[in-house]
Image (cartoon, rainbow, N blue to C red; front, side, top):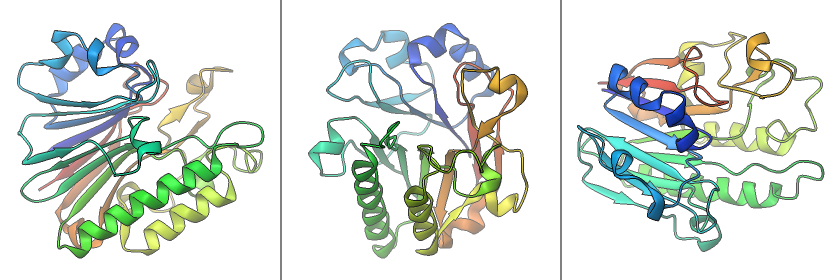
Length: 255
């Protein structure tokens, strides 16, 4: 089974840049989208009803902001649109789909904000709610796949210029410490599992300063699984040649 996660930074803009052609060519089993920036009332039929896929959308109350989606060839057993906390749910950041062998959680983690990082506390609170939910599911005997834009580069090798970004959102000590704590509680960053210590693997590039052309990027998009499910993971990938957003898709192949 092939899963893809992609922060499309506006699904309508991504469609104009070839999203449907890419989907038709690659035919992944499940596609998780973040930052769709489209309200559910405004989703056109050709997007809501893609041939061969069941589609599920969670939009925030604020139009043109945030939003996540799951496109799945297999119909999930159930789909949950919230994590039970209104201040997060109203921003449309989470979709949870249950399948026979795993529960898929796709998230668009908050950005901690520029300057004084005014949303850092909000982000860390969100992160902890996700961790609590993951722990609950694992304790119940479920296997989980957590994917999406986590908005953090965990280690120095996960961004091009770590020394000059220690005070930049996405590489703050508090954000990195949370990621370390998350992994220590029994979760695996699947890309790092298969590519330990390798530099130069990025999933996001600024639109400024020709960053993508120069490959000045950050790895802030992840597929994470609980330890028990790791033996079902066969391959991970970063599809850096796929354009259409300031992020590229990432892939996970599971049994």
